[in-house]
Length: 258
Length: 252
Ligand SMILES: Nc1ncnc2c1ncn2[C@@H]1O[C@H](COP(=O)(O)OP(=O)(O)OP(=O)(O)O)[C@@H](O)[C@H]1O
Ligand SMILES: [Mg+2]
Image (cartoon, rainbow over all chains, first blue to last red):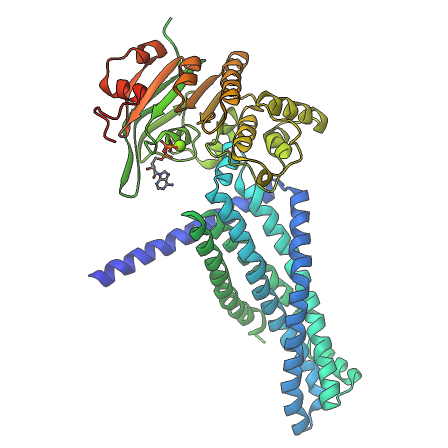
């Protein structure tokens, strides 16, 4: 009986969560459709989020590109197919690791900050104050953050793709003596423009996940400073899980068919 | 002439989980008057203001403001209705990412087409009326609690709303500023011909400004009437509250 009861409670909690997120998405779309956008705030968010995340995104992508190159070059040279390393590195970066890593890094850095900021605004009644003034917290806070993420995450992903390819190219040359020209020509054969676009589409979806989960966790904060801490942690955990899950589903549909 | 009712709570019950805060609470707010609500700390006074502002919904019962039922109203409609009401929060609740001037001017900037210059002028006036000067460009975390509270007060009155809800506007302020705030509430009420609800523990300022006084105890309004009626009430609860006696029907 206890187990059944718990199962019921958890199902209800899950449905409530889902309902809450869907309502938030609906309201944000309404705001966007009615062009109720605070441009200045959006710009500030773009700047903070983009510039603030750039270095850490570049570093993680650089090392990732390098390590893929290291692993694959070693194998490839052994089997005499060193000319395929460029393709392997570019392929995994553009389709999978670029969008994923960037999203995970940004979820940790920006998703948590969004949840913490909005959460502390809930605790100090600032959200109620907005509502009391007849201002919608969705228009005021959620939409600028959503837009900023949706613009900046794909941009960051492009940087991540490039730097991880460059890092891979460097290691391939230094370590397996694969010259850059052959690396690039192999890359161009393996990866088309549509792969890049699909990778960016992924990162757009990840941006929405980070923004909505971060804002929702923030807005549903209860119970003081400890509540803000919980909201922040769950924002990161939930968005990272969703990013991994969505990545699999999107890869399946975008790349699985052929 | 029979006074007209601007807002009311009707049989409002409200609980947070197991904790019942209001039990079948009834309260009428007379149009064009200042109604003061008194009661023990934690009695649910702030909760009543939040209900009147449509920030929370009662578990059962109804809340009416200017003829609109705030219950079961979608947030989108409430956002509209709230523009006629404003709430001066107990702890100011200023947005900490904006300066004091931006905070106070925010409702004007968002809801009117006034020029920046005009808004600046109105905001300066509003700040002046609560005794604040030279803090237009300060951030909330640079000010004392009492200054924040007054800035929150200024933000609530800057749009000249029909109904202003003041949550302990004078608590924690020095006697001179307390008088200034009390005067401002009275003056604004007259100038705007609006309605005000004030929560206060300060008996002196209550009896200066109130037209009506309501006393909240154990989730219901146990005494309500014109100021003089309450002042001379023989209700033992009211007497104990007004005299601050530790002995009486209100358990300490
Ligand atoms: N969001 C909430 N969740 C749970 N309980 C709450 C919540 N808000 C208020 N309460 C409870 O409701 C009761 C009334 O709170 P309220 O803030 O209305 O009191 P108050 O009369 O304004 O007190 P004070 O004079 O100290 O400001 C308190 O016991 C408080 O614990
Ligand atoms: Mg209170």
